[in-house]
Image 1: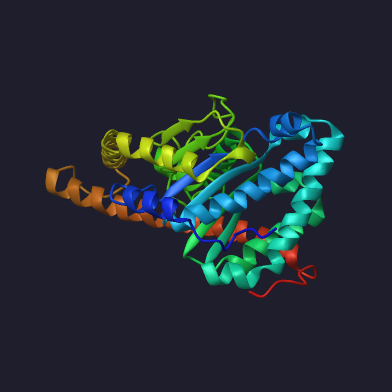
Image 2: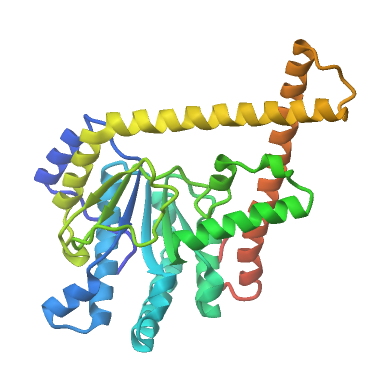
Length: 338
């Protein structure tokens, strides 16, 4: 089956979508697609069939999101913890990934039509090399599309993502690209795998489990969290509408909390810059006097220099991550048209 289905909404679905769009709509929705194995058990079929049905539901859900003008979707496809499952199940999931990413590469015209940019987030080095190559081809083939975005978290946990971001910042300091005083909460966020995306407005978990399972822990601090009892392969358009309605009810409080956090981060950065300049003045390394007007000019200069250092560091990090994909596809990209 296709990654994105072409069918239209029926009359009742279109009517509901029109009503929902009167209120604030989430631009980025994240899904923990839970319940595939329980669905297989319920239907008395093999686990692989449950996972396959879960993918078909993803394709259908992406269509609904497109119709609701939700431009970005992030899905938890495979956790690093899933490698602890039985070899048979892990091998089945890897084979499903091979099939679906191969199919994606065959559907480039459809992806181009909808302008879908595919991003795959996680420690991809844990995957078989052939799957890494398929993922790299998919990422590079769609990198210029910008109408909507699908982020697939594969071989991912949030703790690993945050640890990786901290390591990147430490490496930046070691290489002289950053100063220790440049490290901050916003910079860590910009070092995450998901740095190209805004934080999710709405996170949905199916199957009745009420936990995040190490998914987007940093990014969902001000997201609306909705836990629904339905198993993922049985998810419906109406379940999605219910979650969006819950987001709309909580939207004012979420926006207020997000605004307060952003203001606090800005103030912390101003104070950090001021403290660095005061220290430099006291050490006499600036060659300037300590009067108020001069100190303000030094703070502004230091802020500009810090922003330049951070921009250069982030550019280097982006280039390194892009190189990982381009190196993978060298000589192994029969479908790639960049």
